[in-house]
Image (cartoon, rainbow, N blue to C red; front, side, top):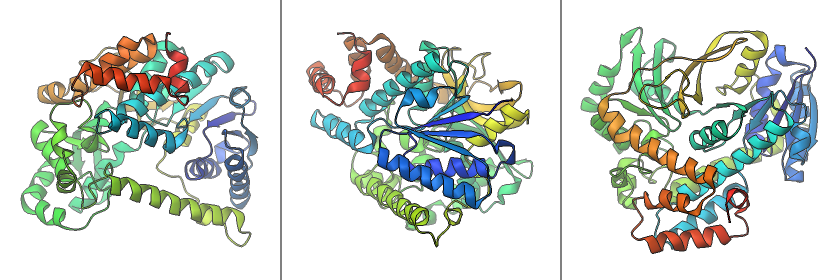
Length: 449
């Protein structure tokens, strides 16, 4: 085969891009490939390029690097496109949150989610035009709505990836189980998945969770925990008791989005602290600020290693394969190495019973030289379907209808379904401000005037 080109869109994140480059460096099968780093921030781009080259040199990996601020140039000739971009970054997402608050909405989640989904569609349309045979690996959010809208509006081969399924490991750690003997299966929609099987040394381990709740949970919840410790939070256990299956990953903190009962976790700062952690969880002001501070601290370490000749980048990016599935998936496809992965793909063949084929579901798939072959999941229990899956499915459909029709009325319907909506006037006022904002470029490309 000729030289394989991997394009990373939104490569300005040194932590993410550095991790991908490291994973390629420790995968000998992929030595000799070309990585095209694309970002609109030239300064960040130059830094990432220099860091990547230094890391490749340290690990004796033969990799060709190309840097560009031109998306079309990045896509030209690409076999794989990794889209990790959040259009206009955290500042615009924060601005959207504040905009939504001015109109009576607690979060700007619907606005920022819909906005970035529009951007993901824009990228996919470029892929369809420039490198139609490439595989799009969608890593930035919203994976659920974004991948669903992409597969409905383009012919681009797309797989969405996330880290949330690793939440079962947090459960194992809290229970004191050795990870090497733990197995789990989970399915649903991205950021909305439930653990349908949990085993330790081949034996059902759900009773161990029940025993922990009965004997140890209260003491655990009294201890100081980080904002990110949500997998065994009161919210997660509350949902487990309601549904009979453990919510995994981001699911415990996402329950407020489309459903009618999730507000109980977020109705006040006191509620957030009770259900999540002493900071109020990931989505509290303090939790979010701590997340950004931790992120910034990591970036400082990475930048110091990249520019200081006396330091090694490989001390930050340890020379071993990370938990990211991106590079192993590429290797499996190119070199016919069958492995099981957790992916987000269209529900073709009824992979998740109870939903149409044109919705993107999350579950396991066998990936090899033969492609991506989804593994079947039985229908989730009726209570999970009625209380969690069906409301989330409807929310996705409303958002996709808005994105793909470009009609104001469709956007209005999506907002009317939000339980913070009190009047039609409230919705119209928010839409007026949002649609007229000069930064709202991705949505405005889709809007029918």
